[in-house]
Image (cartoon, rainbow, N blue to C red; front, side):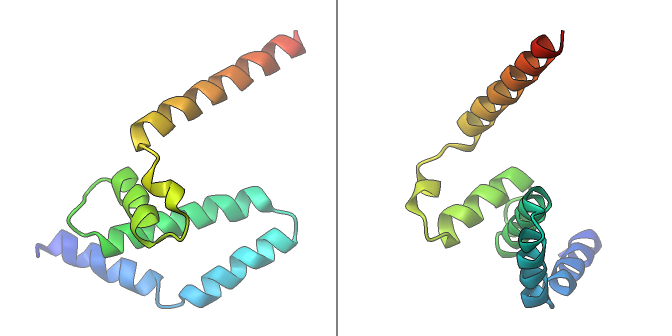
Length: 105
């Protein structure tokens, strides 16, 4: 393993040393009605878990999807293609942005 990969592995390991505390913090955020922050942070945790577990993949999106598919309890993650999901979400965001702008005019 090269020094960059070793350094990255060290920081990922250190990051998850206190995983239970981090999960508890997500619950606190949610209880404080800060669902968006909790969701975003949860997504970061999932991606980091994917990077830690799937060291052969260098792409964050692939790590994220792979860890959900392999470790998630919901079988739906195995049925969703990441590129298609990205396209659908992009269209939804641009559609909402357009409708918000037109309603403000």
